[in-house]
Length: 196
Image (cartoon, rainbow, N blue to C red):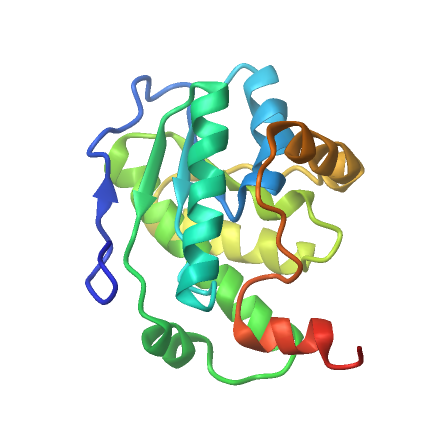
């Protein structure tokens, strides 16, 4: 695992069909369950990408990566892994803003890298499993995705999948995927548990 290096994809596989290949940014296995199912049902060749330098600590990152791997194996889709993991660089990129501004910067950062990978691997478009969560800033997802798409010359597909959130959790239980209790960064963990 590259803990400090630059973005690298593993395995070195790309999208097989430029016209229908959709790169799905996967934040975690549970959110990806119903998201992957939705886009595949729309007729796209769904290729997963695990890129989440925001997830802390490292052991949490590894648990979520394993969940994405288990889902890809169960559903038989290709999973690309960008294993560059450097929390210091992530904090530099998003700053120590509270709430919305930190999250907006984090979402934009991850979607920018996803769009770059979509372009590099030959996918015509990208999307994210963040769009299934009722806890995410959907305006930030749309804005970050559209900005990244324009920058890298690929399409961004947004669909509000929050109505499928409960089903994603059910599917995660059936597949015995790790289900986290906070978004990813240590600040979000603190926000989740500070009043308990």
